[in-house]
View 1 (tube, one colour):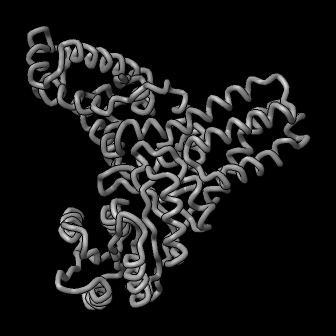
View 2: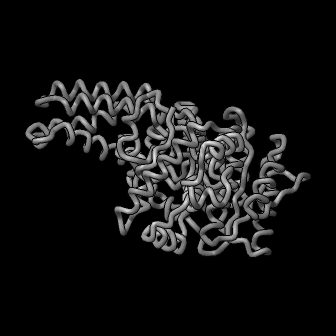
Length: 442
């Protein structure tokens, strides 16, 4: 997420920190470079100009020029202004005091509206709500079937009527929700390949008849300035409450995220970070600014870990560590928990300094899969007592896992080193030892 933007900004900051003394002139030169980086990332020209002007007003003050660490102080100013640009605080969905809460999903075709509707339903269900999905896109081939499939995957009902129009479907769905004790109605509307009057008229009619408590505009983050332009067109017609940025796990340059709120003056509420139905995050301006500037996002990383790791299991694991009984079976269990947190590249991207990795460095997301295959190809006895794995056993494990003997050797060596590290710690062993486990990088 934002890798290219983050790495280019880090190059500017490195040069800035290296200045022996800051003057108004070299500050201005550095900020011109920052503006070029923002424009390269497809940030709206007016937004980039205003952002640089705001930073420059604060950066040329006496407290910066006379600071012991002026370069770091300017980076802090840029961070503060970026948080302000992104919205300052997390924006929540507004729920009605008299259920059902109606949430209208709008956007262009291909932006990811239907998938987001499923993700949102999954998120709300995890928080104890009872959502109903509504298939009001009656034009796109298989749109209704796609939503029904998503609903089955997360065990959320889908209301559809292939013989009715979008407005009637939406109105009837709300009545259906009341009768079936569904407290949230998520209406997936139709989109087009571009903004046109027919689409706008229909979604405006759905809004008029359903009186939604929340309207979310879904936009593909990879479309850059086009995303901002379509957001403005939809907002002028619908006056939506917030935006959702999808496909941020792809080759998104970051321009949409940094421009869209400033242009439409409505908060970003969610970001999509993958295809899976749990790959949806609330938008935290301060955390995203921190990621962009290479400071990491430890808070989100900890939250993800807390969601996946069971407390009772952690206690039992700690006990095994103290008694030096940690086996490859236990290690396999931990790898599976880490995989649930998302792609390894995404997890590493939340660590401070990740933007300092070489531009061509790729975290091998298949590393965990290969390690899992190796351990699964072992017998129970081999997992519990790796010391018995001799040359012939290593060949058998390599053939069974589709890997090489060298990979088997590397894993066993690293596991042996990790076990020795664990013996040095009576508490917190797993946390420190996992840091010693190296995952392959291309």
